[in-house]
Length: 321
Ligand code: TXA
Ligand code: MG
Image (tube, rainbow, N blue to C red; front, side, top):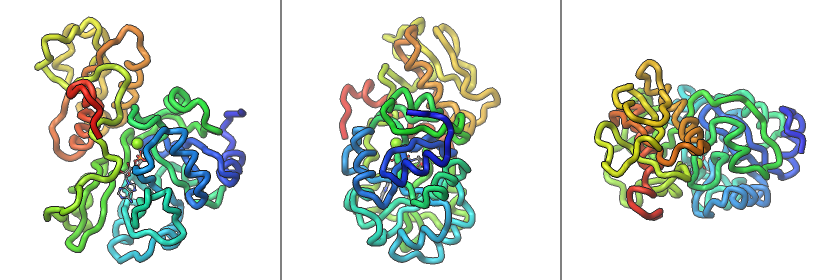
């Protein structure tokens, strides 16, 4: 299929119930018309994603929010005003318009207005809200370039190429509670950022605290991966290892090194993290991927969440759900 950046074609394919991968500022999404259950089913099939893992719907205008949600209180507009378009997903009560397959049968739906203009143009040109998970196979490394998408999902109907994404990790997901908000997934928009608008709800949650689909193993390369600084386990052969280096302190002895940030900047780590993991995954000289950890505050939380999930299979020897 023609893979030129043709917005009209991409929008038509969405209308016809096909799958279009497109850039958002966080990671590439695998998009389908959110209101067409057959089209959404194709997302689950191509990604090999379990049906219990709900999708985020992407919108370009606030009017769509009203159509897709059952009731929206003023706090939602406060959040939208501050963070949209941008990397914040709000989990809200869904309207009847949203097919159950999108939400895995939940009464709530995740909604986000992406900052990437190609993404918003696709939504506007197709005239459809777009359901999209990250455009990777389930559990594998998230895509931050069109090439990453091609590598894992060669059979996608179309890819809009917007270059490398500018945030690099998936959106922050929150839900609203009576007292304020809870974080279901960390991202570049931090708890502290959101607290400028709403208070954080630190009360115990009775049900499971994680979002469905937030399994312990995720974002994983097909190679061994560990998170380690100077405390490298003795059985690691550094001459076969690639390092995601942050501070530059631990670079001795590695076969290859990718400096994920030249200036010790966590935002830069986030931007380059998945790309560096893809590079080492594709490199036949590298058998083990080592990532330097960061302090778990602010954006560091989002980075460490992903690194821990990426190493989980190998450390624990199983991919438990
Ligand atoms: O940045 C992003 O959020 C990217 C881009 C493409 O927008 N999308 C993304 O989608 O990361 P995905 O499917 O890889 O992760 C979405 C996660 C699900 O795994 C689930 O944990 C959570 O969002 N989620 C979606 N709907 C939910 C709901 N109704 N309740 C709780 N969690 C939900
Ligand atoms: Mg994902």
